[in-house]
Image (tube, rainbow, N blue to C red):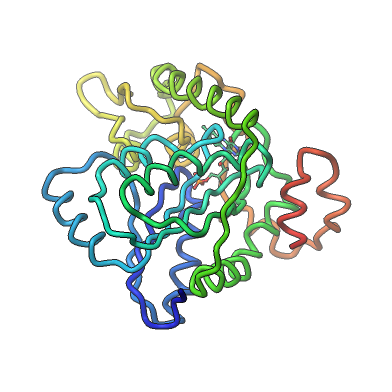
Length: 300
Ligand SMILES: Cc1cc2nc3c(=O)[nH]c(=O)nc-3n(C[C@H](O)[C@H](O)[C@H](O)COP(=O)(O)O)c2cc1C
């Protein structure tokens, strides 16, 4: 099997803070260069039944689905799992799954695609290719600038290699370790239980200008504005879009605050900051176990 002819390709993605979205845009450019017909689709919020009918019509007409998502606690974020449930049953449509992490293809991160792949297969998709891409980390430990900028700059090359693989029909499936699967699944369950609490612990600071950016951009529609000002509901998935995206940096997490990067998260700013900087060799800036998988991805 191969994809030499013009194909109809759906790029469905969930991106909390824009890293995965940037990857999808790079894929879109690459696929359009090859004259394929491409539809990029952000997986956000809940689906009205009219949208579901439209979605079914689109999905049934495609030749290939490529699903991208940011890794959240070694798994796909909830909207991705929910979205797959809304898909129609199809007859062997080809699919690929690309997870996007800050840490790379470690044993635990490898597990991140398993549940989504199984769910897609149950719907009748033929998942023949899966891989991991890396963007700067948006939680707990920031990616050092000299590594982060390399991750951004290598995107076009990576997208070219991966689209070539996928379009030539290359099979790539990952074997995962059962112990890693067990531990990762436990952590993922804990994370999903904690998301509600995290969301309830979000506070608005006095610096808020009530621009309502957060209300408009929350992927879960979890932030409202009313008599009590801005309030947070029970549907938070800890994507950090509101915290990092708030134009006046006025959203503060009172629970599990260690996960939020103190300096914020803004790859566009990083690119500007690093524009004229001479990069340190990878051996110097990506030392140690923590960056092993990232170093191997960048050395590829
Ligand atoms: C709640 C949460 C959990 C995360 N879990 C992981 C993880 O298990 N492994 C990892 O390598 N990165 C993890 N990350 C980092 C993101 O996967 C990474 O920064 C990704 O590039 C974010 O993509 P986005 O900008 O499209 O949201 C996590 C981020 C968040 C917010």
